[in-house]
Image 1 (spheres, chains in turn yellow, red):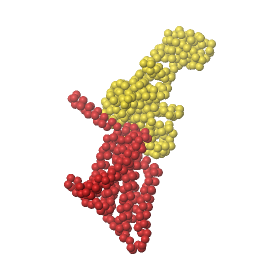
Image 2 (cartoon, one colour):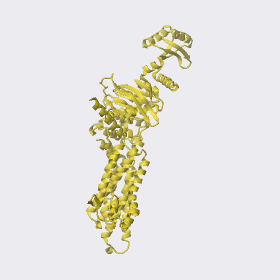
Image 3 (cartoon, each protein chain N blue to C red):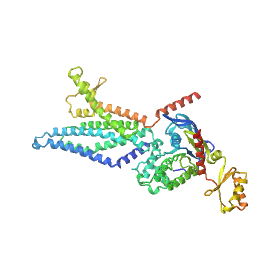
Image 4 (cartoon, rainbow over the protein chains, first blue to last red):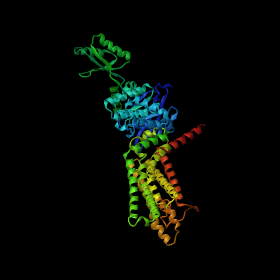
Length: 328
Length: 291
């Protein structure tokens, strides 16, 4: 059965340790001296333009290809030397996943359970659990061919979970999905996060990644440009946070801007008809609270007051970082 | 466990294809029609008392076995030449590699699933062959010998086609190469015998035994010898001074070739086998140095 208890092992030690990994495909250098530590129980997002080396990295982590140089350690196992150990612990969902159209959903999962060495008497329980998890119980005996793309994607995710792996590697899981299917997939990833799975996920939709991931690594030209927890990276790159402030009475706008300009934690204030007041803020949550109190105590009718969401900020950080690398 | 899971999946997929049923129907129909055509031609004049039913039965049996082997040779590659690379085309190969399935289970599962289709064709024609029993003229031992030749030929061609499917990424390429190789295997020895060995035998430069030695690895020749069709070739195959009955020599050669193709498929079915062996060796050496 799929274990629903969070992992109890030491979460401080990295689960995966990538050390100076390079991978070359004939004339193309896919990864260059790439090093990264992935802590246990995190949801790690890999961000990068096409050709940055995300898929290569994921395939190395899934023991599908071996690096040209460097090592990848999964706890005490080197990935290239012990592929069978790794494949027991890792569930991989490639970007272009395939299905056998002439099998039913249950038969499809039964096949993968079988080739993961799960005994027949356990298979039925696991298959039922997984179909319920991905909300495909009603489609149990329908041919895979008849499923929508979103359903196939969820079935493929169930397939990756069939042997209850410790780590899930999802390569562009949301590509080609409609907005509703994306939301469902995001919810599914959150559920898996809650049951303690370590998830490595790549996506072009940075807004979604920022919402799902605890950590991100930004890749460009096979190299790591920035890595760490989402907030940490944004702070590291921006050194500041942007506040979105909306007020009710436009006649108080000048007062609000003057107040913000006088606040030592605010470095720059701008106004946009659509976006409202945008203020660059440097400080902790306590200082942020004081900015709001300051506005309210001067009778400024604040309608909304929020630091900009991680997604948009992550997008800006990504563009800023990759532009910088391009110029170099 | 992993082997049976793969075999079950393969059988499900194959048996759900319409093509499988049509191949079976056409195969039996073709064989039946050719047999019926021969019978109607042989019995078209004179009364039934004047016929040598034994001779008709023997010839009919020989005709059916030859047609059966030709059909087996040309149908078998189609069942396994896309076994592995179709997984690549379907984008399911990576998911197979990510599982606990061993190279052995993968190759054996694919081979047996492909072979079972061919065996199904052979089994489906048993009622047709049993009709020949009414005429007599051959022994059950003949049938068993010929059955062994059918099965080992199918196994060898299937394992070769499977090897092609592990070597080439595209199904069309592996199928074309498998068919081309089978054709060369069948034809080249005949060309060599006809243009090189027969003139030499005629000039008494070499013994007739050489011809048998060259043609012994050919199912058409073996089935013809079994049925006594080749009066030109007789005797046993001689290997290192040991005399071996031709059909046993053929089964032996084909079994060795099947094993070789199977082992090569094991090497190529999963990528990086040699790199991983080397990495393990380096790790082992490092470990020993540390100790």
